[in-house]
Length: 181
Image (cartoon, rainbow, N blue to C red; front, side, top):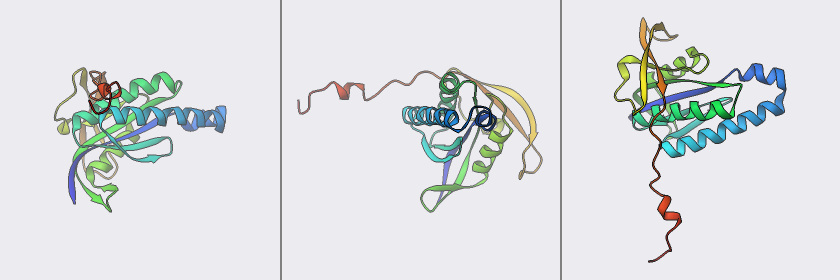
């Protein structure tokens, strides 16, 4: 089954060097904090964590705006907790094959992974041609044309910057209600 989705690949930039310098235990603490933040932001933004990839992950959003808001929130929150490491990410939108009910195969998946590999520091990269709608507070700055392994020719890419509007909780009142009123 082919489905339209936005794919986000996220990676802790500098994790390997951090592990070498500070040891496995320190790296484990940072990774644990990072995964906790990913779970929290994904839950708030309605994004699914498809799989963990060592010091990174692949996430899937039904709506592009949710995927973008997720990665921008994640970048901001992880920078505070995972210092001196930073978050880099690649985002791509398109149809992909839902494979065996729990994985995705397709050009958009591969493009998001390649863009994450290309990103440095705190960059969030996305193909210009795929932008549908940016969340309030997020801008797209020209990054330029780049070549990605496995894709013919060059791809015009933007770097996403900014902070999306905070998420309003639609369940807050559930915790304060008396049952069966």
